[in-house]
Length: 112
Picture 1 (cartoon, rainbow, N blue to C red):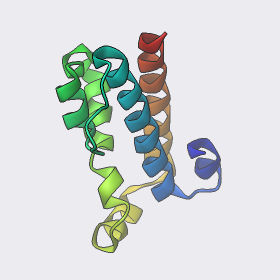
Picture 2: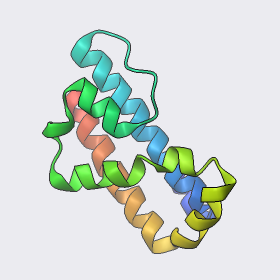
Picture 3: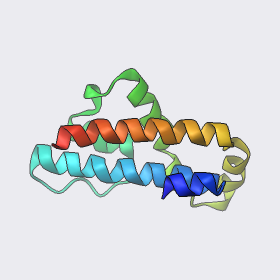
């Protein structure tokens, strides 16, 4: 979905979908590690910290997690949305999308 939205230049929704994909796979990883329901949160930092796997990420992976983490909430509220529209360019969103794909793949390999 994020890739299609990137092509259509719907940048706000690109980053929102990137956040969603990482949130969902982190929750699957949490479930695998703890055999328990993950916390009811959209906060990627909290989820990975409570899951005990934040420190397993490389510095580059931590950077994208920090970048994505607030986008779930900010993309939903008008007071943040206007600022995000100005910051989210084709180049920025392409970079976020590519880094998200790499992080998603890394977590997916951990699930295998």
